[in-house]
Amino acid sequence: MGNKTFTITDNETGKRIELPALKDGQGIPAIDISTLYRDHGYLTFDPGFQSTASCRSGITFIDGDKGILRYRGYPIEQLAESSSFLEVSYLLMNGELPGKEKLDDFVSMISRHTMLKESLRTFYKGFYHDAHPMASMVGVVGSLSAFYHDSTDVHDPRHRVIAAHRMLAKMPTIAAACYKYSIGEPFIYPKNSLSYCGNLLHMMFSVPSEDYVVDPVAEKALDMIFILHADHEQNASTATVRLSGSSGSNPFACISSGITALWGPAHGGANEAVLHMLNEIGDTSNIAKYIAKAKDKDDPFRLMGFGHRVYKNHDPRATIIRKMCYEVLEKFGDPNDPMFELAMGLEEIALKDDYFIEKKLYPNVDFYSGIIYKALGIPTNMFTVMFAVARTVGWVSQWMEMISEPGQRIGRPRQMYVGKDVRDYVPVEKR
Image (tube, rainbow, N blue to C red):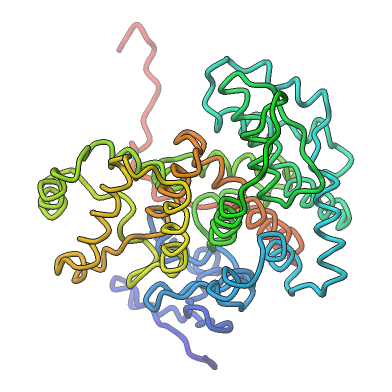
């Protein structure tokens, strides 16, 4: 972008402020306002940080207008088609795809560190018997620094790598234990012979009294969903992890804060909201009525799982996962379950209706992932937990990138104060 600058003029004083423009790689150009307050006494006002780049990052590239998502430069379409979740995890954490030997070593190392300390497993017993799995996950992950305090020195590069590997390896075990505890079944130990996603399915659905064989279609579907959800730039949970990490907090606490942000229904709860919406619609005979409600700007009803805040054209992840969704439904879907018929009816209308086409309200990744999870027998209250397992590698990659930046500083957003002006204290008896 060369020496291009932007000029701001103070209409009262006529003072002109020149701000340099930044353009790194293929990202959106930015205006450098880092000295605006220090040198000129002005803040920028940007609720929700819609127009603010909070960091430089080389991990994930998104072009919402063109429907592009890349990890470390690799198109998500290629990774979903040819890679595996653990290979993508290595890519996100290290910047390059591994050779076969490095990949084998990485997979073996992650597989060998999936177990939890026995004292940590008993930690679950302190939760109420019907605790939401996300509540349990937040507590357990936040407590990890008390069990693995030998890898919490954020200034030690080796500690950072060990903590990142531990988080990635243990997250499926933590998630499965959250589920088992919520339904009153015994915890299942991980099996090193299984794949990352196969192990998670095994720990969730097997019981000590019976043999359990991981279905390859379910394993493949979960692996694909995890690849698609591994990272997504500076969303609310990732930004939370970075902000927490900027204070020097240990990595386990930072990831716990990210899980907390993900828990919100506007973020990680989107695929769960899809199922709630389908339950509200109830039957295919009601589709026309609810489509009309969705088109009515004065009606509060919204079709969940359609359109995307970032992707203004189409969600590239939805295009990938749609085929897998149909494969899963063919294998596991109950033909007598009206919800699946209802979901497919909504999809058909959204892809053909002029209103949805004009507004670009296409089914997104959350629409299909929610349907896949239901078909695999994963309960609705576990949807966000599964999201957290997938997103952990993105969080730790972003955290490692941030913490290793030279000159890294604690995050400290500012505000526009709109409260009372100065006033004197009045004793209580005189008020």
